[in-house]
Image 1 (cartoon, one colour):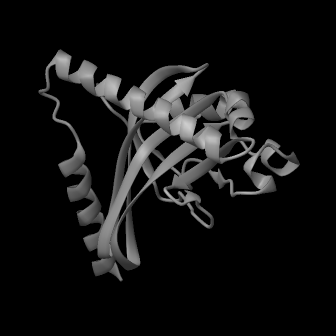
Image 2 (cartoon, one colour; image 1 turned 30 degrees about the vertical axis):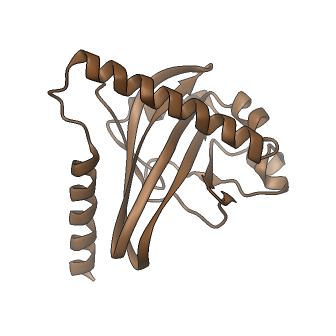
Image 3 (cartoon, rainbow, N blue to C red; image 1 turned 45 degrees about the vertical axis):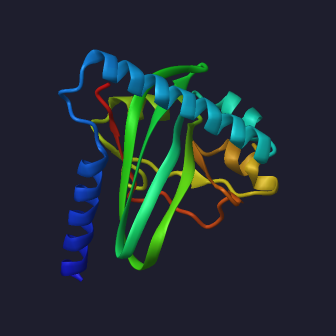
Length: 188
């Protein structure tokens, strides 16, 4: 089991390293990257609002919304995922972030999904912002919303400090957990 964990960690690290931008990029490259991420976030939010009833109301109640428009997962037995996105506070970008995760199990192939993490309280948002790397499940629990009645704000989700959506090309994903997913601020 330790060998699998070691291999999964190594694969995730290699995957993340391959996907990150170098710190030697010019200011123009950084501005272009920020603009590209912002456009993708806008598009991902529009898609969420169009496909998931109640999501616009839910995001409007959030103190901050972290959006990863395209989290790509790939693997064969051991896998990893990576994506870049932005935090929106009061409708404006408040920072750029990357997400990574490793997995072990019955994996074969690749897929892409959009991930939305809603910080429903100011305290939850402040703790996220103060972290030097945040891990879902370890630093905070994320309640994933599913299609149907639970996709919007109800009495159960209203009590949660952090909620999330995951949207694939087929629609809202069920039975998905973000536990173990790491989020780090990008220096763009």
